[in-house]
Image (cartoon, rainbow, N blue to C red):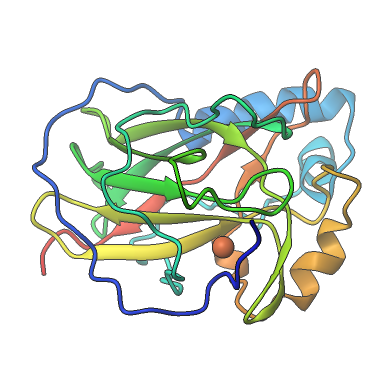
Length: 234
Ligand SMILES: [Fe+2]
């Protein structure tokens, strides 16, 4: 069913007992290198073209100590999501995305055991409000790394107008404050026949500093990278 997404709400983020999960993930830097190699062969997006031409990238820079910008949580977060890195459940048929990254503190040291919650809509722009499709939480490994296997969400209409495709997330170091934000996609992203540049441009909630770095799609699947920088003390 379609909802009036992101309609605000006063949810108080739950805290969990922190445990160490043995997830893995390529670092954003490693992904950027891999993306550069593939982009050189088939540059299609602005990011890929920049890489192919050796120009600097304006997305997902190395940690500079600045906290990742926060964004509204919206009303569709559900607590007690399953602990898992793969949130693609039966019935989900969107464009696959393998997202990796590192959680850093404001001194740019990797944060081990950081809790990350992800939730998003599906290929039709709908959130699963009865179950946990495209919802999950995980903990960074001893390198601060995480990996999320998901799909690229579709745009949808909500309280704030047409929302560009985005992934909701919460990130929290053990004992630290909760960062709530949303991740976006580059203008050249190709999914569902949608014009991501136009969708991004008209979304007044979008923060371009929260744009995922995407590599060139391989067999219709995208690989992405995003590093978080969070405060570790309240
Ligand atoms: Fe949303």
